Image (cartoon, rainbow, N blue to C red; front, side):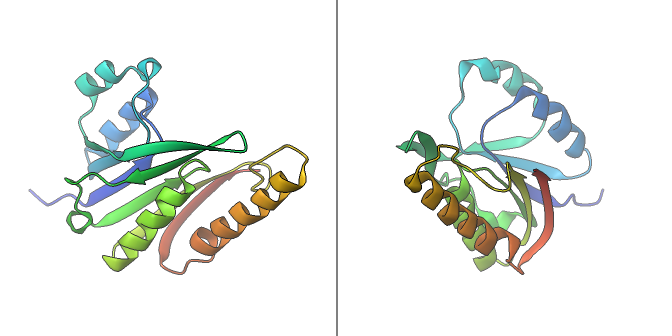
Length: 163
């Protein structure tokens, strides 16, 4: 039997509909998922545990509010060793942008192949209130996205969607 490629995926939170996708992928790859957010009751965690055929980890996350938006600050779990994986695929969203930048930097130190799935909304605009602070925050977040994800030559694969 050949060894399956070991992949670590990051996700904001558990979504029951992901289980079917990850189970199917686990037939071809050794899928591992790192979740940044705690389990909410509506996410059907008991059903996920019974039906998931892939390994998962939970980051230790603190949620902060910034001008009405949530920002997750996470620490990787102690039982997660990046050296065990062949590839790391980061799914970025605005709540976990900082988490994924930190994980991206760690993946680069470990010389891992890096893939990125970036969700883009309204031309990367994150805050919609029309005040100066929101405009400034939009600018800062956009600079982080461009610097760490769009212009990063270490990223081997990229999927972006939105408008």
